Length: 210
Image (cartoon, rainbow, N blue to C red; front, side, top):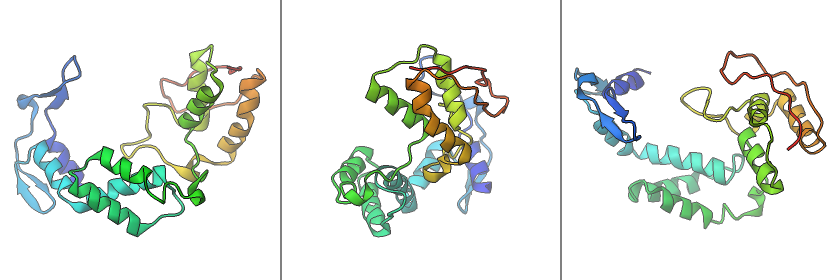
């Protein structure tokens, strides 16, 4: 936690202009000493990034995330992850090369890993629309469905991002997923109540079909 707070001070002054381009505002930067990973100096944001990327554990962390997302969350091969991470590190963190390694691997193409991943709510909704060619007449319905299943696009619960796998499934969300085809394709309305968390997207929306 201390490292995170100290590193955050190195990124003060970082921002963007109206065109979305990176902009450094020196008058907003914290130039005082910062302690990070056992060293103390006036770190810049670039130096913090370099220190993190020079640590091979970063490559392992990222590769593990990719393995769990694209291959399997259940059949984890530590040796494979470290092999891919080493190649990823030596490539200078080339994401495209890492993806090529994954998609051409035996692990990715092993039938034992097929159909093992639980889709997130947004992936589920996007997949339904792509496979059926349907569109929602009321865009607010999409917001309601996201809220009902626990994932509002662009509103992650915290800085670590969204959960994955079985964390998307509980008794309430599973029941709603089972009801979803009937709601969408038989034009059945639902009065399912989403949780009231005070979010701006907390709309009272009646959902019909696509």
